[in-house]
Image (cartoon, rainbow, N blue to C red; front, side):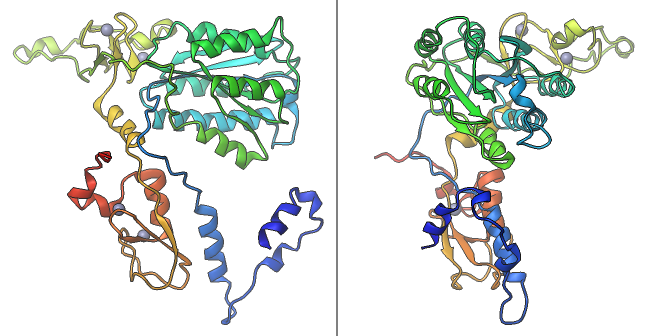
Amino acid sequence: MADDEQDSKEYRWETGYEKTWEAIKEDEDGLVEGLVAEFAQKAARKAVVARRGPVRLGMMRHVLVAVDCSEAMNSQDLKPSRFLCTLKLLEKFIEEYFDQNPLSQLGLVLMKNKRAEKLTELSGNVRKHIKSLQGLTDMALSGEPSLQNTLEFAGRVLKPLPGHASRELLVLFASLTTCDPGDITATIQSLKTEGIRCSVIGLAAEVRICKKLCQDTGGEYGVVLDDVHYRSLLLEYTSPPPRARALDAGLVKMGFPHSAPPVNQTDPGANADPPITVCMCHLEDGEGVGGEGHLCPQCRSKYCSLPAQCRTCGLTLASAPHLARSYHHLFPVEPYEELANEGQAQYCFACLRNFTDLDKQVYRCTRCHEFYCWECESVVSTTLHVCPGCSSRPHLYQRLPDAS
Ligand SMILES: [Zn+2]
Ligand SMILES: [Zn+2]
Ligand SMILES: [Zn+2]
Ligand SMILES: [Zn+2]
C-alpha cells in the first residue's frame, strides 16, 4: 500500500498542497522527540551497496572532468544557477576524489562555443584544480557545447597514458543538443577500442547519444533530480570502478621520497645557507624557490607536494600513507544487518551508549555479531572502513579472501 502511494506522486507539483505538519504526530506523552530521532536516522542512513566478492578495481585512475559551459548552464532549476551549483559541487568532488584515490590524477575540460578547452592539466594537485574552478564564477556562458570535440580531446589526452591505469572521462552535460564537426559514433567506437570509460551526468533530460556513449564504453549515465541527487551522483563517482577486462595488470615502479634534504651534521656552518632548490611542480609559475620539499629518490628533483609524477625521470612518487588510504577499497567492510530494536543488546559496542526507545533500529555485524547504534554504523561505513568489533579479534581482522 505504502509503495503504491509513493509511486503515484512522482513529482512535487502532482501532490498538490502538502500539509507537512500533519506528518508529525505526538506520542502518548505528548512528545515529538521519538519521531524527530526517527527522521534523523532515516536521513543519515544511506543505502549501502554490498560488493559481491573480491573484485579487481581500477585503483590508479586518470579522470578528465568535462564541464558544460553552454547557454543551457544559465538555467536556474538548480540554485543559484546550474553552473554555480556545478562549480560548488565539483570543488567538493575534487577534494573527495583525491581523498579516496590518493594515487590518481584529475584534469578539467571546459565545453564552450563548440570547442573543448583545457582548464587544468592532468595532475594530482588539488589546490590548483580548486583555484582554477573558483576563477570561473564570472565566466560568460554562451553558445553550444560539442560532445564529439570533447571526446576527441579526451582521447588525445588519455590514449598515450600507460595501460595499467584506469582512464576515464566524466561529462557534466546540461545542453540537450551537441554541435559536432563529424560522425560521433566513430569517435565513440575509437574510445571503446581504447578502453576509455566515459560517464555522463545529465542536468536536464536523458539524451540518447549520451546513453549510447555510456553503454558502449562501460560508463554510467545519470540524470539529476535536484542538487542533493546531483551531489550523490558525483560522489558515487569517487570510488574506483571495477576494472575493465581491456586493462592490463602491470607492476608500476614507485618512489618513496624523503621529506627533508640531507643535512650536513659535521659542519654547522654549511647549514646557514641551504642550497637553492626549485620545486618542479611550480616551475612555470616562477614560485617555489627554496623551502621544504620531497626529493625524488631517482633523480633528486624536488616536489612540494605528494603524490606526483616526477617530471624529469617519470617515476611515480608517493608516500606510504597514500597506499594505506587506498587499501579499504580492496577489503570493504561488509554492510551491517539492520534489525528492529527489541532489546537484543544493552549498549552500542563502539560508543558504549545505552540503547533507548529512541533507537528504532540496531545494527549487527555479520562477522563479529556485535551490536551498533545508527550513528556508529554510518561512521563505520563512510569514514572508518573498519568494524571495531572485528578489529579487536585478530582471527576476524585478517580478512583473507575465502578459499572456496
Ligand atoms: Zn610546488
Ligand atoms: Zn625523478
Ligand atoms: Zn554507537
Ligand atoms: Zn564486526
